[in-house]
Length: 216
Image 1 (cartoon, rainbow, N blue to C red):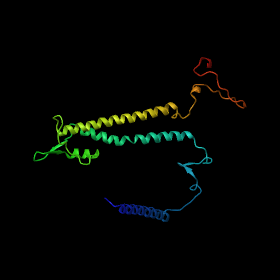
Image 2: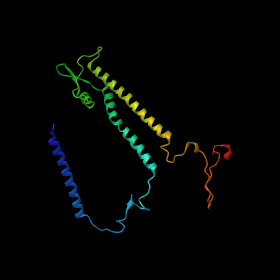
Image 3: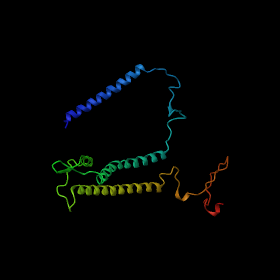
Image 4: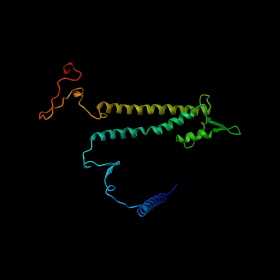
C-alpha cells in the first residue's frame, strides 16, 4: 500500500504533467497555426447557424423540466449495471456446464480457476469449497445452491427497484409533466375560437366541448 505522502506526490506529478502538456500544446498551436482573421470568422454562431436577435432571452421552462426528468431516470437506470454483473455471475455459477470443483492428482478437491474467478468478481476475497456438505450434497452442489439464492435475491431486488421507477414514471405522466403543452384537466377538449382580424375584443371560450352535441 502506498503511503499518504506517495499518493500526494503522484497526484502532484500527474497535475504537473497535465499542466505542462496543456501549456505546450497551446504554445505550439499559437506558433504554428495560421492567423487569418476576417469578419465572417469573428461572427458569433451556434451550431453553424448565424444568431438571430439577442442571446439574452428567456429560456422555455419546459426544456428544464424534461431535462430534469431525464437526469433523474438516467442516473437511477445506471444502477442496473452493477446488478447485471452480480446477477450474471451468479447465474453462470449455477450452470451445469461450469466445472465448479477441480480434482487434484492426490484426489483432493478444490475450486476450479473459473469458479474462483467468478466468486472473486462477486466480492469473495478468499473463495474456498464448503468444508462439510449439507444433506448429502456435494460441495459443488452446495455452492451452486448458494449462487442460485443470490441470483433469486438479486432478481427480486431489481424487481422492486424497477417497480419504484415505474411508479415514479406513472406519477409524472399522470401529472402531465411529460406533455409539451400542459392544459387544465377541466379545459381539455374544449374549443377556443380565434378572434376576428382587427378586433379589440378578447376571444370568448365556447360553452360546449368538441365532444358535446351542442358544439356541432
